[in-house]
Each structure stands twice: as C-alpha cells, then as structure tokens.
Length: 595
Image (cartoon, rainbow, N blue to C red; front, side):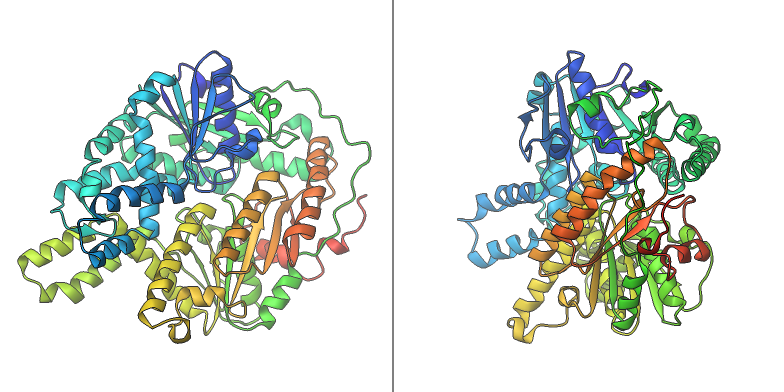
C-alpha cells in the first residue's frame, strides 16, 4: 500500500461513513505493529466500533490489543471526556464561588458543544504528548465521518483565533480560562496537522458517485486548511473476474469502472491505492491481515445458490406513514448506509400521493439535489447548512440585541458570536424550526451520521430540560422539539442499516440511546441487501448468505417492524429510480424464484 510507505508519525483515516475507514485503519495498525513498530490506534468517532473489529473491549483508555504484539488502542469517549472536562473547570472554583454561580457554570457546560470540545481536547493532547511520543512509533487515527472530522480538524485554528481575541468573558463552554490553558496545545496541534513530515491524511472512498464526490470535497477543504499530505484509498472494488455471467455483478463492475475512469483531476493527482471487495466481513485479525492482499484466487461459490430473501419492502411502511397524517419522519443510522437515498425515495412516494412534503437534511455531506435530480410536485427540499445558519444567527442576534448595548458591550457580544459554539446554537434553532413544520405537513429528515446526530439530540435534550425547569415541570412544559420527538404519533424514527455486523450493532446501540431519551424507533430499514437479489456471482452470493442471519436477528431482537431494500444495479438518482425502490408490488416478499 502506497499510503503505508515511509509513513510519518501520525496517520489520519477519513471519508464518508461506511467506506471502510475503521477496517483500513485497523489493518494498517496491524501491519505496522507486525513490522516491529510500536503503534497506538485511536478512534475519534463518537460511534466507534474498533473494539468490535478486534473482539475486545477498549473504551476511553489505552489498552493492549491481545492478538497483536506492540499494538494498543484507545476509543475517545465524548461523554467521559466531557465529564472530565467539567470536573477540570468546575472543581477548582466549587468551594470559592457562590453556589448559584457554580450552578450557572455547570449549566453552561452541559451541552453538546462542551462534549465536542472535550473530545477535541483529548485529540489535541495525543498529538504532542511526550509520554506517547516515547511509547509509540506511530499513532493511527480512525476518525468520524467526514463532516464531523472536518469540524474537528478546523477547531485548532478556530479556538486559537477565538482565544487570541477573547477578553476572559464566559462563553458556552464556561470561563475562557479553561480554554486559555490549552492555547499552546492547540497551536502545536495546528502545526503538526499541517506538517506532511509528521502527518499523513488518508482519504477513503468507495467506488460510488456520492462517496467519490464527498472525498473530492474533503480533499479541497483540507487543502484550503493547509493540510496537504494527502493520499487516496478506493475501497471495495469489484474485480472483473468476480462478475461471471451475473447481471447484477456486471452492472456494478461497469458502474464502478466508469466512475474510476472519470475521477476529478484533483483526485487523480493524489497517490492512490485500490482495495478489492472481499467476500467476508472484516472482523478479526485474520480478516484484517488479508485486507491488503489480492491473490486473485476465485471465490468458491456456496454449495447451494440462495433464493432471494422473503421480506417486506418499503411500500407497506409508506402506506402506514401516509395514513398517519402529517408528522416528522427521521432517517437515522451509521454513515454510508443510504439514508439520503431512502429519505428522498420516501419523500417522493409521499409527494406523488398529493401530500405536502418537506425533504431536508442535517448532514453537512448530504447531496439531496443530486439524488432527486429534478423537481417533484408537492415536494420542497432544503438543507441545514451549518455555515449559513451560523451567519443567519449572528445577523439576527446583532440586529436584535446590539442596538441596546454600548461600544464595549457590542464588542463583547461580537466576540462571543465568533465562538465555534455559536454553530451549535444556530444549527439547533434551524432544526427546531423544521421540526415545528411537521405539525402541518410531512417532514422527511435525512440526518447526519450517528455520532453527530446524537450530539444534536443532546442539544435538543438540554433545551428541553431547561424549558421544563423554567415552566415549572412536565405539567406546564412547552412543546419543545424533544416533546415532539418523543411523541410516536408525531415522529417516526426509521433506523437505516446494512446487513453487516458493524452497521447492525451500531443501529442497535443507537436504538438503545434513543430509548434512554424517551424516543422509540418506529421501524428498521435494511438497505442495499444482496440477500434480496438473485445474484449468481460467487463473491456476492457469499456476502448474501452472510446477510440472512443478520436480518433474522434484526427481526427477532431489534425491530418492531422492518423492510428490506435490494441492492440496485444502478445508484438510484431521479424520481423514476427512487420510485422503483418503493413501488407497490415490488417488495421482496413477492419476488419470483431466481432463474
């Protein structure tokens, strides 16, 4: 692998969710450790699954990987990091300041912004920790999906600039003194990230249009931030020898090769590696050791060709959603599972029934316009753009509050609005506005990958708790966004997954988190299922057979109701292709036996 040749100290793997960042990061860490180097593998993803890959508990502490000598791992736990951060800020003043002041600081430190900056604190500490430098030759970072990672990598400069201009006033993180202590650490992090002799950024993509478009955008943004030590890895490419006479495999191969031939020039200029699609799930040491090999040996087909899985498609879910009247439909799950496509398909199906529908997304990396590829009657489309919402919020605050302030007060207000935490408030307000629209029409919301969505829901919960406190308890509570999300008559949460081990485990974990917040998922959707197709490719058949047990587990253990959507020959784009995903009579329960 080119990206592992003469590696610098720090390796960052990033890209759209579901492209295989974790598998490639873990395999890279194993390869470096087995070459005799001391390696620390770090996950910065709030929804990390590194422990699942190695089959052992890891968590927010450095632990040795039992199966690999000289390899250790750490999963940064945002909630635990936030708790330690709060203790560090509040502890020294708890016995000095009046109780109401301490309580006010604690309230300021209870939001999602604190969670994010606390995890970021741990991340920057790892970049220049002298003890880690002595203990490890390389640090490999498995990062969150792209939008979240770009925000993380922008933070060193953002917070450094904010601290330089700060006047010691309180921000949404509490006293700035808590951040000012980290000024040197943030500056060091910025220098390390921008130095290709110390840091290499590996952009991971799948041979899919949305994934390649996203990685091109990421490349451009990282370069604009001065982060130029970039490599490209395209993962999961179907080989010509695996297609045989299979129509589905042939269509996938042709589609992938066409996309690879049309790579943007900026990506073609990057050092690039290509990794073949594997027949088995990449869990366990043996699978990781074989990820970078391509023996070209043919895959042995299953003893018996599987018939397509018999399960309901999307049509019955659409019928129930339409019958329930206006409300919010939220699609949630791990990045890369197809939430954007399914959200668009659901919205088109509802709109073509003459219902008023608003399709929107909270995902910074979503491409709703490209997925729809045209307009549909009764359907409006929007996107919660963090930058636009932040600027709108700043203008509103300055227009409504600055007039009553003197020059010094206005300066303080403008400084506070330059805080990166302003984005959290702005995005939450935009989210709240759209949730309220669901009182009078259908709102279909494509959400960001799991970790980022949980941060947004955390902000929703914090706002709900504050409003409940101000209104004197649940009996007098205002109809906050959280109240609407908890109302199963108003909100239907659809958990989207692939029939693969990690996405299913993550969806199950997300369901547990939602239930703790009083939100009951309405249904699961298993997307891009090979088990629901008639593939005759030996490699795809092996993957299809492995899906059966996972889908059975979803039905038996997790989902109140579920649907299975077959893998399409072409990436669905445009109303016609989206309609085909949900057209009545096309559920896999009615599929004819394979020829």
